[in-house]
Length: 157
Image (tube, rainbow, N blue to C red):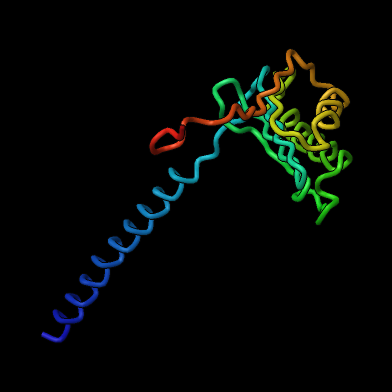
């Protein structure tokens, strides 16, 4: 009788052990599926968006659909305070963003869209050509004030 109880106990532990292994395998297989590495996306032509303010310059490199490939700013490259708004800082930020896009995505040519009136406008465009990427077009998309819409309320005589 004691032998039967021992056999039942060993059978129960053996039965429980495969369940634990199955759940462990399921957990690792789920992790493998979610952690699958994407292949590098090759983008030959893209666009560079430059936002140049008085305080900072932000560079975003995108593909033609608008998905961001890389981005950088003067502040992200170690410039602090009033140095972020300089032309040199804008050039460094543009070089870094375009180097990443060129190495990781094989970017060859870009359309440049410049927004803002900061000092980094021209320096960032010059930095694009020094990296070795061909510039197809340069477009200024800075918003221009036009007096606004009519204010709410009655017209004044």
